[in-house]
Image (cartoon, rainbow, N blue to C red; front, top):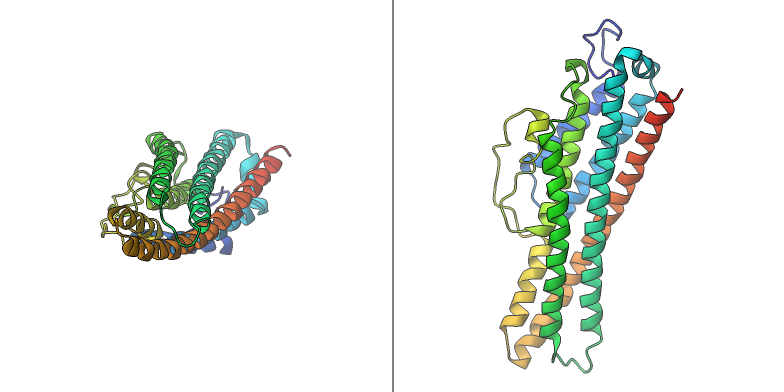
Length: 283
């Protein structure tokens, strides 16, 4: 893919789409370095990723790009591009599974709270504990997905590409960084995070220095409300904490819905890009 222009087979000036890819990369890198782990921030990054991969798909439609892919000496490069697109689809699919499991946990707890009769809170504590157990299962799924991210980083993706094609490596690295942000925000919403920690090997760059304490996101707020509910035994305090929990769950459900929609749109875009690659290589 003609991301840079030092090769004699490419024009002397970069195509506007190449510049657009770089602009999207810059915005996403800046967002990863400075933004919080809040759900609106993650949703914004997912939207940015979709725009980035739409640019990549349009870049694939350029005649020069297709000619470069069709050249016999670029067969290894083409195979690595296909492998990279499949890796991103696998990670995105895992992220979708995590969001679905989390949504089901939240909906189950909301349903239990709504079924309370006359405002009675008896037995609710045990149901909260069941929710927390379900959250542990979600975290196991997240740990598995994070393990996949580590494996990708250790492979040093696109290691055989020359400097003309390193932009594609950056596209994959930024995409994986956003996925890591998403998974970390769900699993450990109060921890310090650096979304470049697992993908720095791909980027072959230094770890982002900015590692500020993440603001409490919607997942952390729900966890705090649950712990508060369990910790208060009096009827009056439980009623107050149930009301707070309901509010926090409503906010979390809305954020999960936004992230679910963002992942679905991104997943469709990744599929579209892979289909474009396969069509070009099969010509």
